[in-house]
Length: 197
Image 1: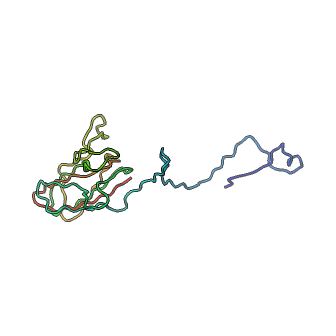
Image 2 (image 1 turned 90 degrees about the horizontal axis):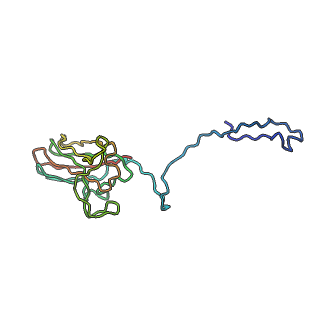
Image 3 (image 1 turned 30 degrees about the horizontal axis):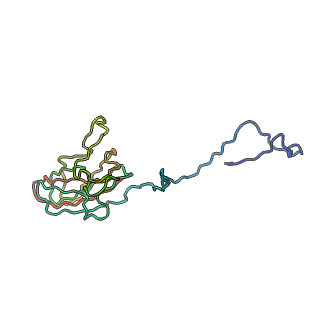
């Protein structure tokens, strides 16, 4: 493919001197070439470079709560999980939640606000452990629970992995999940998460 072509204009001195060339018509040549582009981020309104987010490659924020009685609750991820606590979904759309109980049966899983002593952007004293509410695609005219499953049957001693999609939890800065043991007996509960853009 020719990306750039030059020709002598019919009124040029070179043409007058007898050098022959194809005449130039009124068409405009538009360069047509394919060039890969890599988008790695953008410069925000303050002039700061903001890198593009990418999905977590593996599960993160592992935690284990031991000896949770029937009807007992945990919040996950918890501070013992390491540096990602609670989940910061800024730039992420969806999330996988993985739960591994030692006692099979029903568990309630609800997306809740993180702890009060951490800031949501620049706001402190959030309503800790409150069910997250907002508008959802199925009911855009009123606030609804963003994610609440009152009775999910989990198999014991294996990872039960669930995607939470549709962007309902996108950009939540202090995301935790309240998990209630309704299995009928005591259970150790392991959790892990994977965020997706």
